[in-house]
Length: 232
Length: 232
Image 1 (tube, rainbow over the protein chains, first blue to last red):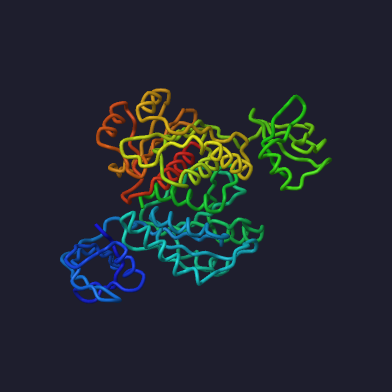
Image 2: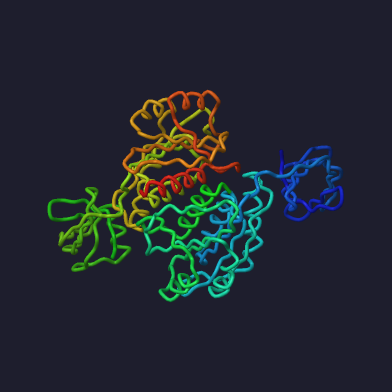
């Protein structure tokens, strides 16, 4: 069934802007049943009621709880990466069941924050949701500072840090009901001062082996491993 | 240090073809020290001796065993995927320490085998090796049949199958010294007949959760998880 992120309004969903373009591209028409993914965690079965020039309206027939949204809260803090690597990261973290993504600047980041990218990244996550079946996209926050990240870490029960100088592979056991944060550096990695700051607030090192992984590989690998362990 | 896949000839390495182009792009010159990655598992420190019009020669100064090659033999059987997804798979599997990649045709594969891609895929793996530090590239075999794959499976101690109908996440414990095979379907997945054939030869289902992962995401995630478990 065709899936959409339309705007809920009472018993109806309204298709506007990009989502209305998508509606037209998919040749949706009056009478057709479509699935509207609700930001409330429900999937709404709807029937298209009217198609206007700039928007369309569908009426809710029934709804059910989406069962593919993440069951554990995993937040990824990713050092800002260059070019289109962030697109790949957003798509894959959505599929892998991560809930939140913060990108951060650190001493060795080369890429700079681009808030104008945010709309595109949100679209990428929405498209990935449609494909993998979850309804709540990744919540994306672009370009916080390293120190802002440090201040947020006490909110989490478990903080795992992909420290490239630590090849330790001691299997970590993580309870399902914990709030988990994963920290992955940018291409340039972390300065010694930053590593010390992270260790001083009690983050756990997470070794990804002795090969040097690209930033986006480390991010996707870590989300895969931790997601598998906790059954996200 | 600049890294190359040159051809070993006695006490020398010869840079030809693509690798000679690469040599020129990096502006290597006589007297410079470079690292030649040997297919024998050694890294060779060399000094450039002469640069000719179509090739260059470097003399071996010393060598040491490469420590970043995979320590466990993991083979991935990947249903053939469309477009450039295979490039991403080859790059990431190289970084993640997979030893061999077979792509196979099955009932629902849409992509067709392209042996003319093989040279390009080998280059992608070589470049990934230079970046992650391993010296032995992924061994790539493109486009075997589903039945050929079935015949090969008894060679492996453990065969894990990413069965999308199985969301079981029972953590699998795998000994380090085993020969491991991972099977991931193409975009279209497997037919019921194929699933039954796989189960009848004793493969273990490996659940990647209840979201529907893209073929390349399933492949990268599974290699990450299994690689982490066995410390590849």
